[in-house]
Length: 252
Image (tube, rainbow, N blue to C red):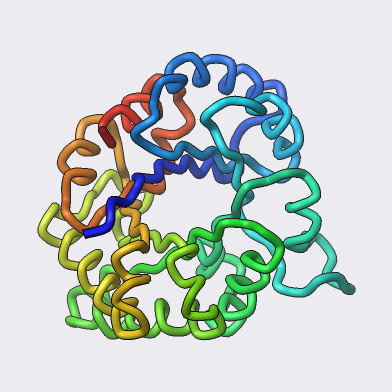
């Protein structure tokens, strides 16, 4: 089996001014300076991207944006393109987070264009997928994941599929304090890997599948030890440098 380097990414959402971000990163950097077992990323708001890129240069910490538009340019007020992010030396971008889907109407059709646009600009995408509580209770988890994964990767060349990290985020676990049981998380991650194997077994072995949904230092070791979970997309706990560093350490 291919060895996959875990990715621990902290999604700050709409938190932290530039001053608060600088305070955070100065506290985080010494705590993860020897974490050569994992890739570490922070995902600040747009306003803090350039300061965080500057403050993390030469460190182990990468900087990802939280979203982007699929078009190269145009009359899209409030949006940014992949090229705009790449110009800032941003390393990657979260795409399709459930909050973007639910609150801002992001569609699978748009994501099918965003993922290859990010790759073409040299950005590493994290594609988020996951089911609602009602969908899980109705037995529709696999149907939902199949649709989201296949749509999101539909325009990605097969040889680049493994360059897209997939974050499984059960919507009912995001920000609620509820966490998928380890068996549920492993089952979903293995199903996602099997979907990717349908296009390319080789790419499937290389693909990183993350878990997201109320990840904390207390539950991270068990979740990150699952055979098909290759890291975490961390929400609330990523706002505290000590807690986030503990999750990074758990990936070892």
